[in-house]
Image (cartoon, rainbow over all chains, first blue to last red):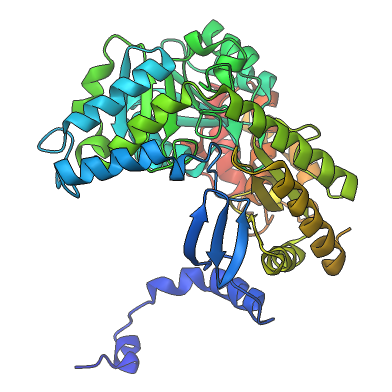
Length: 411
Length: 80
């Protein structure tokens, strides 16, 4: 029997969806112009780490976080195929029950080798790694001191746990120190930082911040999702590049960026780390990654240990794009290129959406990022470079930005 | 430092954030009457924390909706 909306209203039912009305209205006004929906793009074919057929168009990918271009690496793909043949399509179980196969142990070994650390724990996504570690490690009566521009998964980890949550202004060492010093004596403290902040592509002054955290008796967690494989001599991230990796208690990372598949992890030297496998709910109460995924991840992580040339080429790409966009007159998120993310600041959401669409018509995909994901209410076109982008492709990209920017009237 | 003193000091701290010059009473809400967005809240909270040398955690902020509640919270956190 069909529900009669009038009867429902008469019975006093409130529509739980009315809280989304503002978002629905904003979305409708954006799409009213008949443009393409920035949040409903479909890739019909993926030709390589840097090219796909998007909404029917041959498109250069400049917004995938596929920094090291490992998604089509022949060894990685072969490892996945072999695991599918030998271990099946999925584990159908939790890591602590029937969901730990040889491949799950192997990828954890690969991470220990990659970071030179004693322990590694693999989660089903990077989001769950932050959710699980933060909510479990910091409990009632403890304090989490975190950067205000932290990723949603970090905030959600705080919300899931019972610790007191104390944010400080982005990358502000003094603001962080003041808050640490005001925490009641004897309380546990966890400082949460990121190596690269993904919205603007800026890095954290980890050396100074970790020194302050340690001087105030805090444990330190650093999310290196956007630096793994690329920043630091061995690709271990910003903490390695700044010489303070040995001071970090927990490194959080992901397989869905440089590693080129999906999954998340935490590596640590804490002697009691392994107990987390039993007490961390987002680790226990979910199915483990499929065998093919952990096999591709393990192969990719081990190859990334020896990817010095690719790292060098990615830096070149990042510097070339940053310099080129600056010269064209675009406003960028950082003065200098600090990572493989180059954020182009748009005047407002409307022009940002128009520019995004103009670029797509040129055959270029970038991320349109808008509040609340962005800091200070900014609209950003976020570009993430890949080690597999050729020097010629970067020049092509600059030409596309020039034409689209002039057409929309931003430059 | 009594409640009136805390009230007066927060009143002067709020001025630069009260862009529309809303008249402030104990019942004035930050999200509604003062139209504070999350960034303004962060800067405003930081200013109060520095002035009184206290921490107002996000957990505590969630309980504070209006000016009077804020003054009460700061009086309590300052140990008066």
